[in-house]
Structures are given as C-alpha cells and as structure tokens.
Length: 394
Image 1: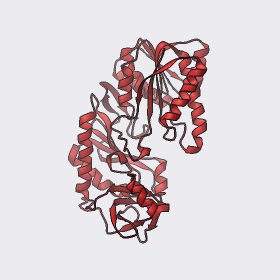
Image 2: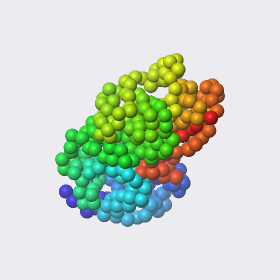
Image 3: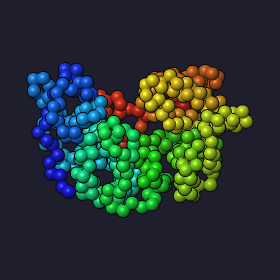
Image 4: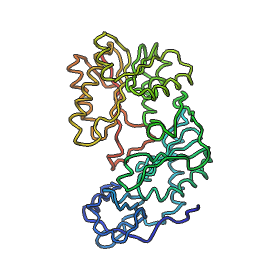
C-alpha cells in the first residue's frame, strides 16, 4: 500500500498556555491546552492554530491521550511519505557520523529525531519498530515502505506489546511486518557480538542506550569486575577482555541464558554468571569480604512516576553504598539511573550520601547520558532520561 499523502484538512486550536509551550520549544501539547478539536479524526495530522487562526505547525492528533498533540514540524507543509522518507534519511545520516564498531543502534528516537512516538531500532539487517501514538500507528504502512526502500532489510518486526499504547486506545501487538525474521539476530556492538531475540526480548529486542557507556567503561575496567543487573551481559561481555574475571549478576534466568549465549559468541572464558537479586548479592558479597576493582550498576528504573521519587533515591543510595564498600582503593564504579524523574543532581546527591556512609573518598571521572543515537532535544527534558557516572574510589 503506497501512502502519497498522509496529511488531512483538520486543524486544532490551542490555548494561550499551549502556544507558550510551543514557543518555549516543546513539542507536546496537553489535552487541557486544546481549545477546539471538534470533528478531528483520531490519529490525523492537523494544523496547530492559535485563537487568531494562525498556524504554528503540524502535529499528530490523539483523541485519547493526555498528550493531545505531538508536533511534527513548525512549517506548514505537506506531511506525506516523502516527508517521512526525508526524516528517516536525516536520522540515518546522523547515525553514520556517530556509530562506530556497531551494527545495532537506534535509528529513530521519537522526539529526538523529530518523529514523535516512533522508535526504530536496527539489529544488523533486521529492524524493530514501535508506533506509540494513534498518529504514528496510522503512518506505519508508509514507514514500512520507507524502511524497505532505504535499507532493504531482511525483516521488519513490530514490538508494540507495550502498555503505553493503552493511553492512546491502541491494542498491544507484535509480529513480523515484512521479510523473514531469523530465530536469532546477531549484531556487533563495540566490536563484540551479541544475540537478540527480536520477537520476545526486552524493549524492541534489547537495550541499546548503554552502547557508548559500555565502550567508555571498558577504558577503565581492570582486575576483578562485577556487573550487577547484567540482563544479557552488555557490560560484562564488553568489559571481559580488559579484566581478569567478571561476575555477572541477574535475577532473570531467561536473561542469563541470553548472556551465556553472548559469552559463547565471543569466546570468553572469564565470566561467571550468578542468578540472584542484586541487592541481596551485594550485601552477601560485602559480608563475605569480596572485593572488586570494577563495579557496574545498571538497574531498572526505580521511579516510574514522580510519586516514587523519594523511595527511588533511597534505593539508589543503598545500592551505591553497597557497591562502594566492595570496591578496592583505586577501583572504578560505573553507576546508572534510567529514571527520568531522578535528575542528575538528585542522583549525585544520593551517591554522595552513600560515599559518606561508606567512608569512601570518590571522584567523578565522567558524567554521561544515553548514547548519541538516542538524541536529547534541548527543549524537551523528557528526552534526557539516562544518567551514567563513572566514579573512582581514591
């Protein structure tokens, strides 16, 4: 099916507050700031107008989400397959500038690539997509055509089995949209081989936002290393060639099976995997007086909502306190938070408190974020979610 034109004639009027939000550089307009959306079709592309009927760009319209409008462009232009192809090509050109020694990366990162609510991840010759709004769901057929024309992928799979689609009134679904999906997609990241389950793995098949942080951590890794919350071994496998030994800790047996597969793909004999709760493991390791030269903490988000912030900060403090106790003098701690509601300042404060309680003197070696293929839009703070600190115990 060929989509030559996606835009419709609809327009939506926004309030003064909504207009101020747009002028401040954000790309979302909340439903409370939509003054008039009568007879607007769900998922349509609309002209965004103020009370004087002036157009301020074009956006995806949602009839159900609290994010009623997601801005596509501040220009008044046709939103069609050619527009989509242009945005995808621009995103790809940027990735060719920044991605090194890696065949798996994020090609389209929603608002960060000016294609809101769209995720496209590349795993070698296979692509995995998420269309997370009514409007982007409507564009899915055109997107498939564009990806096929520009990349000729082996397969395109959708991983729309995420709860956030319910906010848009969309059903969860997953499956192959084009081509033939292999049972295992193997792709190189930072020169190491990794296997991905695109049909059933986490997110779109794996976690790609730590790619550059894993390469950075490898620069400091040495001695005996610990990778806590290892999932499929992204840090452990990347650090292993620089370390005497690595212990990877993960509670999920399914994830550990994939981690062992990644170890096998790279012919590494110095990784030991432990199936355990990471908090419990760290406590027991300290009691047993185990020591490490390198520790990585990459936990899941502790604060999924703002109401969880206080508890999340307590969790980060406890986790980092236990890790600092395990580190030898001169050792490195790579510690991460993927909770958007936890700011870098909050995160640093929690770790500083942990360092004081652990009686350790700690220096900041690097302050990092998500990999550059997950762009941070300066005026959209929601696009900056991952904090990664590389610290040294002196």
